[in-house]
Length: 327
Image (cartoon, rainbow, N blue to C red; front, side, top):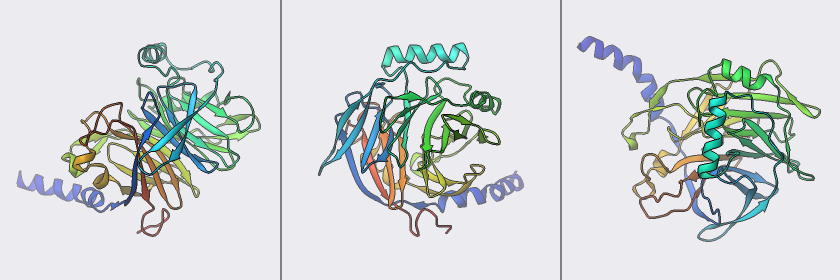
């Protein structure tokens, strides 16, 4: 038994060392968001000089966030989404999404937000497994995503379970490449490329997929948590994933989605005052720029330990040496 324990410790030590060695990001500011009536902040993006947010409980508005000294004020921008494209998902998944939309609101269940350099905004709908574009000029339109996208994702073990579909979106500044993050059971990354007015899989849509679990932060007792993605961002020819259960941001390769480096925000997010009940208060939204990262917290209308009931936005400084650092 002692020999077996020694072998296990030896095998696990590199992973434990890697987890404990993660650089902790420095929190620069924390602001509650006033004015998102339904709460449930699910996406963030910096577009045309302002930070924008989306809620997965509202199908007809984005929010432009105006900074203040003690809070951010959300100002709604309304839009009317056309009828979504036919969903190529099993009947059971479609019906559960439909019922959830009736009960809690947000039939489209927008779970991510991104934008390109021209000011076009992109919203990913988990319920419809589709992407809505809000052009800088013109009416909203659903992107013509390739038919093989869902087929390839499901063949790789993704998008098989309710509430475990697309959870993040990222677009490059040129608006020519678009990435989607599958949330969990299995999680993964997919990519499509723009071809005139439609989008294609070039060399396959799936970058990678994986299942499993890993030890969570020490602040939560290091309990095993399922691997997941809750947000996705593109910066300087790299993808950045928000991994809420692990309380970290990871930089990933564009070619295959492999991890290059990760940074933790657990020390700041899991102070006594910022704790929620175990089910709520998870990081859901991510935007990365040269100076740092914006992270949005979806509190589900539940209070954290200090009594705060509104959605929260954190601004973290970029890591020492920048996001491209290797040490």
